[in-house]
Length: 413
Ligand code: HEC
Image (cartoon, rainbow, N blue to C red; front, side):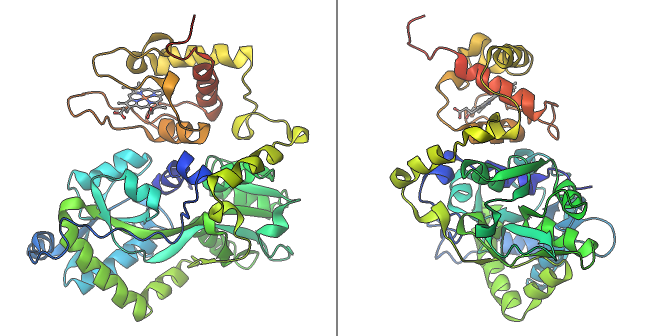
């Protein structure tokens, strides 16, 4: 049942070079007040919602513990949206949409299918990358937390060094723990990681706190989720509204204050066994400057742990490059050009000059991309197991090593 849904894809997306290599503390960032609308008195979006009698949320019909269209329990995002709607004096309405692709899902909001999109990371990076939205204040601290069997002695991230840690592939902990030299057990879904813990194959995992809490609840008293996480694994969760609806954002902020103060948020989190994470303990790299961080990565490249990218067996050898070339010809060539040389009228990016990291590349390929060129009719579809076009992680990484192998523009050939 647990899929690589929008929540985990979005968290994968925020693994941008900025987060990996800069001093951004992804936790604790505040949404910026919208300068254009601050101080205006008119409330067009609030009036629209009130006239309709409904605050409509975009939500996935099968994505517990966040949302589910079946009768109670509806999921924590739905329950919280219902409290907010009642504070605004309206009912809660739904626009159900399977959120398997991050970009396409969030687009439902800009296409005005709904008024609010809950459960978005209000981190600096994500906020900056979302041009069509403004964000409320966070309603709880989400992110990634340690889940373990109750009899395990693990008490903090410091205790993970000599353990094999269950992670969901291409999420923030997967990438960060890998660069820190921690051994990982890779899983496609949180469910599978939890099964491995229950079966005794691994002792601990680092999963989204929501999935971890919900799965721990399902397995009675065998599992426990730790309440404290690392700064760089903490993501304040907020609500996205369309930029033109900043008045609605302000009204929702007031509602969040109220339902936080009277305990309704905590009660909802408890219902689904989701921790409102605390940040503490070793601060790891989040406070370091990019310059002081760089050597750390080198130290983590442990030769005894020789493996390919992302824990797959993909390394940049002839075989993988050749396979990558074949996949590229099938999947990417039409838009990004033959031999990775872009020259089409839509001016799509020339991937030879892509400056991002492999993590960012994978995030883009899994989620797809809207063109930033208003006259372009090409948008990039989502690839990957859950995307519109099925490619495995290995195949996506083979394309990466192929792209990296191409001569850069301007170099002698
Ligand atoms: C249907 C057209 C289409 C296909 C097919 C396609 N892309 Fe894209 N790609 C785009 C568009 C559009 C963008 C965003 C351009 C922009 O930012 O305006 C993009 C952006 C990217 C970027 C980010 C580039 C940058 O510099 O920011 C990467 C990386 C990428 N694509 C990789 C791939 C790979 C790998 C494949 C094949 C698996 C692929 N794309 C297939 C249309 C496509």
